[in-house]
Image 1 (spheres, rainbow, N blue to C red):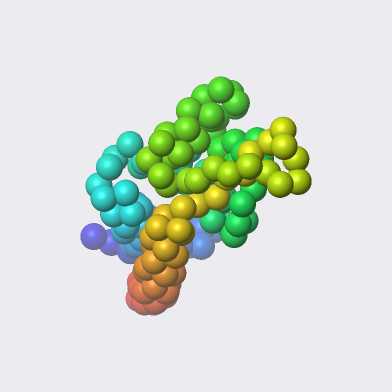
Image 2 (cartoon, rainbow, N blue to C red):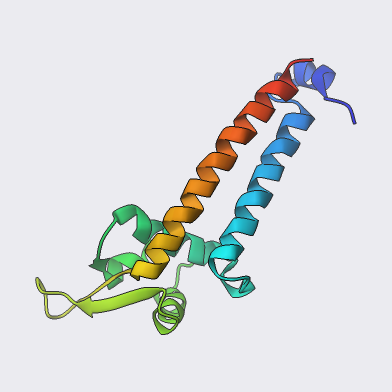
Length: 142
């Protein structure tokens, strides 16, 4: 397997094919770890769930249910986005509470168990990212 350095120099691209393969290896690792969060349930191997759950994790606490629906980038229909959110509520991945600031709205947050699982997932992902960065660097020198 060649490094693709000649092609890289000719096209002005920054990375060679081996470095790009390392990136794919990293995304494969992250995808496998994401599935482990859900104990192999491939239903959650979806960009919609990724957007929803990582978005709520990023906020770090409860958020309005309507705002959570907006986190799902690839779904334009609020009704369809609601189905994804409803699945997470039914499975106990996300919990819903009354909004003390506005009785007309509900708040959603990650369940404590899911928050812990995602914290561990991100720790593993950051470790894998560091290892991958070292590998990309090593693959660039030839």
